[in-house]
Length: 363
Image (cartoon, one colour):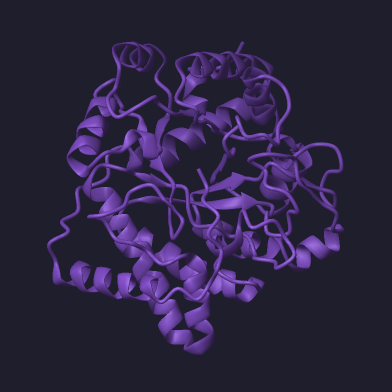
């Protein structure tokens, strides 16, 4: 007999606009997904987004976690009056000039980001990027990366993780097992990384392996890494998620899919959610904000829960419950301190010294 479970607990979903509609409210009350992820379409100003978050959190007890992509640089959903952050790659450039300064600024970046998110009730940030930037690759990662070497990414993203960790906001490292060498953008097509397992171990996988124990969650990449699985994208790959990440590395955190509506994946949304859960994801992101897509995602989650082994399902549900609970309503943080104000000024000054021509916008 299956353990008692709510399939929507395996979902992080989008909503349509700047207010919670009557139909969305009813859907959330009935199905109780584990989280809602906000995008630019959901944000007008801080007063409005606070009201939206409060409305979402009132739909269930315990409330859904609120997620966002707030990497800094070109992937930053919340803008002024919040901090205009440098791109993560700017920290790497500073690190090459002055290692201590680079690490300090990256740490401040994580801390200020977390303080700002917690101040309005956002508990989960889909950052940092742990991919290693490569010149010949598609620019979708580009200056979102903390460097061009494993050492830079490990040290700088590690400092950023320690910074946000002080604020009560959860970090989600991405995009496992590494998107830096991809020749195409997985928002549009399925990339294939042709490297051997040894090559992956010596480069792409290094930041993930080094930092996995410090992160409560890792997000998958929609790409085929041939050294790990020549057939399935990592999001659907048991050898990548269950064997490498869980068994070989002993990762205890949540495995979260990237948005399943992205162009890299095939099939309808229900199938994509189902395949993600069977591949080893605990949580699946479906971010379109369309109610019909949330229905389809739920259908896939129901099928996935039925198909999962009982023990595997129990472990996944326990991870979701224990790891996400502290981030459901982060303790409100004041943004009136001198420490915050000074750090904000320093980060914005660094952001103004742009040394990188990588203007690609990520939606």
